Every structure is written in structure tokens, then in C-alpha cells.
Amino acid sequence: MSTPERRARPTASQGFTLIELIMFIVIVGVGVAGILLAYTVTVQKSSDPLVRKQLLAVAEALVAEVQLMPLTYCDPDDADAATATSTADCTVVEGLGPEGGETRYSATTPFDNVSDYHGFSMAGIRDITNTPIGGLSGYGASVSLTQGGLGLPAADVLQITVTVTAPGGDLIVLDGYRTRYAPTAVP
Image (tube, rainbow, N blue to C red; front, side, top):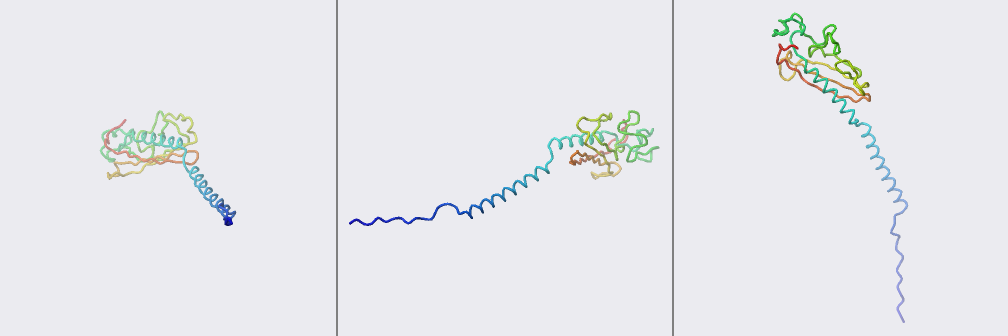
């Protein structure tokens, strides 16, 4: 007689249980939601590269404009401006802020010294002739000056701080310095 065949016992199923499958879906769902939330916050807080470039270009241009102006002891309209070696030699001492009637845009009495730019601001970016720059009407810029810095006497250095804002609230602050290396240079 032949030996009876042994039958293999049925083994447990090799899949996932319903509870394991639900737990996997919940864990993956929470992880994906967290990643998407972080991505959304990052995208919302990042600046548009074009806006950042425009902000920087305007700030650099304004700092350069201010730095190119003379830094004299006397107001450049003063007859002693070219020969003064201190404020004691001036009839009209150059102070922070524009003198009466001077503006950035005036053809007859324009800003004629670095210090005239202190407190200057504009809503909508304009060139030196007061012509609006296309596409930048929602931007704004302001200039402030502080005496001193760079380890030199305070009277011989002005720190120039230009702040430019974009319509969405982005802003950039750029600093520069102007030193009195040629006190008798007048335009």
C-alpha cells in the first residue's frame, strides 16, 4: 500500500490586513500634507526674482547718484565753497537736508550736495528729470544720511541708506558711503 500523501497545511495569507493598510494611508497622507504645507509657505514667502532685481537696480542707481554729488563744508552756492577747509570758512554751512527751494528734479535749483538728499523720498520711481519709469509706478524709494563711519572723523563721512519698496511689500535696503576726500571740489 502506498503511503498517504501528506497534504500541506494552508498557510496564512501573505498580504496586508485592513488595519495595516489604513494606517499606511494615514501616515503617508499626513507626511504629504506636511510637505505640501512647507512648500506652500516657502513659495508664498519667496520673492519674485524680477521684483528683487528691480528693487536692487533702483537702490544701486540711487546710491550711485548720491555718491556722485560733492561733499563740501559749504553749500556749493556759497562763494567760499571752493576754498573752505572747515565750516568756519563758510558763509552758508552745508547741513543735512536740502536748502530752501532745492529739489532733485529742479532745473534751476537742483540738489547740489550729498547732504541735500537727506530725507528725500519718492512714490513711483522717477529719473532725474522727473520722468516716471515705466512699470515702477507702484514702487517707492527713500534716502537717509548719517554722519560718521569707516573710522574717519564724523564730519568727513556720510553713510547713505537707500530703502526701496515694491507694491507687494518687498523691500531692499542698500548702504553706501561718501567721504570728504576732496573738500574743495565743487561742481
